[in-house]
Structures are given as structure tokens and as C-alpha cells.
Length: 229
Image (cartoon, rainbow, N blue to C red):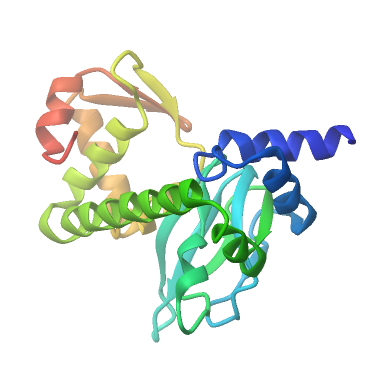
């Protein structure tokens, strides 16, 4: 086994979706997978294309998005390294990608053959249960997000975003994707995002240096983000 093969199989093992697979199953997944090396902005698949693969992000970040009839891009999800996406589409009667996927940064993703993996599920009850749990978690996450986007102000969304990206013992973190992308993800205009950051800075709640955010008053930020877990 080459070092590259080992790295990919190790990455599969670290994903909860593949953690219960046997070595034989992992090798089967690997034999039917395809590696995609993407440059920033490069399209992986378009909305409406037939499903061939679902994906595991090895490095970089991916965005899942739809384009409205008036040409506005709505970012549905930002997928970090180690996360799987498009896996639920294996079970749809009309298996077409409902969104487009493109690289937010230079990225490497593993495409797992959806048809082959679905066939393998018949031999693995544990994997079926993991997949069910993964889809349930993703559904709860989407419901939570809909609540956030529809019931709460732009300031609340930004506060939650900052808190989600800074653990309780972490005061500083980097905005590692463009502010315009974050704004689109939070369903606010870029100028609104900039105004909210300015207001938070003027209140002494945060400071910003380039792409580095420093939280000075976590309690105040939590007060603004009412959906913090």
C-alpha cells in the first residue's frame, strides 16, 4: 500500500460514518473512490447533475449552494475537513444533486461511489445505523439553522457564528474564509456584516486585526446570541 493510499484509508477511518467498517470494507470503499484536487473556486458538481459520488473533505473547505432565479447565491453549508456531504442522496428516488458544490479554498476531497456503498450497506447493520444517525444529526442542524436565520437578527447570527468558532478557552480565532462568504452563509448583506462587526468593536465586545477576531467580552457576545448551546 502506498503512503497516499494509507493516508486516504486513515482519513476514512477517522470519519464516524466509516469508523465501524472492517478493513475489507474500507479497502472496498477505497477501490471505488476517486480523489478530486480542486483549486479555490473550482466547481465539484452542479445542481441537477446525477449523483455518482458522495464526498469526504480531506483538506480545505467546500461550499454547498444554490443560485436563485435572480442570480443570487445562497450558501447552504460550509463543509470543513473530516466532514462528509451528499451521503443522503444515495436513498432518493430521483438521485440528482439539489445543490452545487465548489471549493472555498484549495481542497482535496474523496468521492465515494454511492451505488457501490449502498450495496455494501446490505452487509453492515452498524454502518446503516451510523448513516441514519448522521442524517438525523444533519436534519436537526438544518432545523436549528432555519430557526436562526428566520427568527433572529443579523447581530444574533454573527454573535453565534463567532461563538461557534471560538471555544470557551479561546479568545482569538481567524476568519479563514472571505467575509462576503460568511455574510452569505448567515443570509445577510456584506455591508450589514461589516456594520455589525463595527458595532461590536465599538462596544468593546470584540476587536479585529485583519482576519483575526479577538473576543474581549464573551458574556456580552453570548447575550446577543440567544441560540448558543
